[in-house]
Image (cartoon, rainbow, N blue to C red; front, side, top):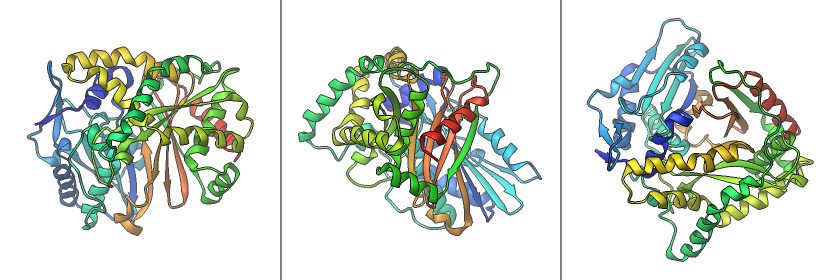
Length: 420
């Protein structure tokens, strides 16, 4: 049995409103694996990260992760008959993982004429994007018969991810926690979206993958003079500017708090925060000006402790409280921390370069893609970015209720904002 961390409680309490936030990694490989090889590798990942061998059990006083008695092989699925690989991938990606009944992960092997497609899925209640990267790295290492590149740490606490901070950081942390309290007021002053993404009530979730070639990416970096992350945030601010008429632009982005751990390690946990860059409308005329302004904003946030503050400020409200109370507090915070900023801007996650994490597959790996996080109840697409073999990959995810044109519109606006 494992105690549920407060971020787990918050995410589980948010499922009814925002979806299970399931994340799927899709890998096309030139080789094939037997069911025994897949099961052994998945069992090794569960051994490394015990939370993956448990189901979620809400409780009055404390929520818990309870061990699942069924064999790990139940989470491994093979599709070997002739099928439409993309359609089969979509079918499994739309199949939720019920964390209250089963392990929070699944591995599907879909046979292709030239190899295998692996679809590796994790519920966000158990791990965030950094967590699925860690688990995927361990899984890939065991499939390839090599050791993981970094030590595995079973600690799932937010405190563990902040182990590199020291006592002298406390004044800055308290300052940024106070600033976090003023976040809703700043968001209220941001530009409200006036031109909405087209809706269609009966439409299911949809996604689209874009690949920006290395040459195009080099031109974006040269033109912006900043990091790829800042250039993408600037592009999203320019998209938001085109959908509003006045006021600064709000863009939400995630920060992995593992950067504060002190030493590199692999953890399956929820240790990410959501920050907002408020970008002046006056700087969104072109990409270079926007990117430089965004770089100054994100540098201040990284230079301080805005990321830890965003997590610790709401957690402090529920610290020590019974988890049934914590769940209510989370629901009270939804309108301020999620709904309000998403009525203004877009949300963006940058996974970073995935080459090192997937290095165990070597030349057998042909391509990689991400599907998710599986979100609903919002009226804007989400954007997920990662780098692979010199190219930039973008996934645009439209929650249920948005029309297919929403992704078409966003792709067109992003390409224009990046000046491609």
